[in-house]
Image 1 (cartoon, rainbow, N blue to C red):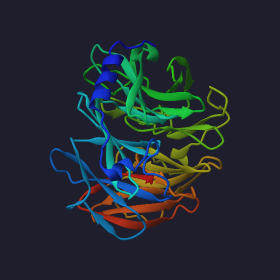
Image 2: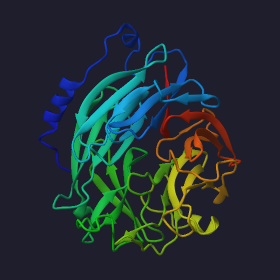
Image 3: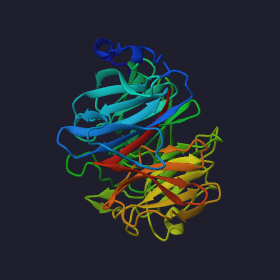
Image 4: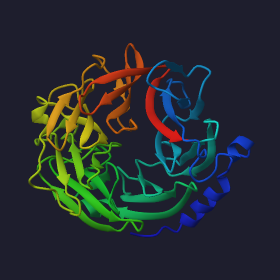
Length: 411
């Protein structure tokens, strides 16, 4: 790990460009938690219209179980071609993907009237990984080709919206196989940060291709120093997660479960020979549990995992690729119970899914169901999917744009 000399400059820029709104209603919102102590909550739904220069509209609603909402004449406009979102410390962060250039990090919360208000706005590096760790947002810029092989990690204080630390790691040295490591995501496990990665060529021709398709790696870093402590390895399936897709989750017991789509390619050809599966790291260990192997591909009838969201009590919502044995096809939804190693297809969902909010989902207050945005050729709705019954219930319709994220804040 190496401290960056430009950290002080970045922090100064952040301090200069951050601002707090000064309206009376905004002042009453309070810091650091947000809109006060009314005991109320509000949903944030982001939707994209596809209009040039506009990433998404931020819409708010008290109830997503019924009715409809529209982007027409409604919501807060997010500029740019693409935005990604995360919540921490009861704040909603909107990060602009800058296409390799620095992008805006915009922070919102709810005031005491439940109105979404902007709290800060500053420039930061465009990143490929972002995760909540303690009271921080950890972001990582990961090089994928060229001479540069240094991944830069930034710690953003979620309460103050300030960059407070930075570390660097050489992805070629991490891979140790002639390729380079590309982090798929970061997950807090206990007091550490576990970062699954895939091995990629990064040769400028077949950047995300690999000659190492059937191995699993998780880099373990301490926190907040972000010093590499160990790499956990396995060869029963492929890498965990995917580009921009989390594949490692910690449950309430402190165990971590890794999800592999087994979708590694070389020159655009699927070359993974191991099955799409779930593996486990027991609490307090830094090894994969060799007694645990959940062969999802076998139990699903040959389908591969595309993306994963945790519900609770060992229940996960899976997006599965629609074509058997392939990494393509219209997504299908399923519930995986990692404790009992059962796989159940979700019922009462549309026959054809254009897309779904695989990365930005929430769970219901009781922890029993996932709340997910589903976009179809016929329209776009928010669904609640029960983790025990695998039955979906249609809720609010979102008109004038496809759903890209769902979040929830208190005020």
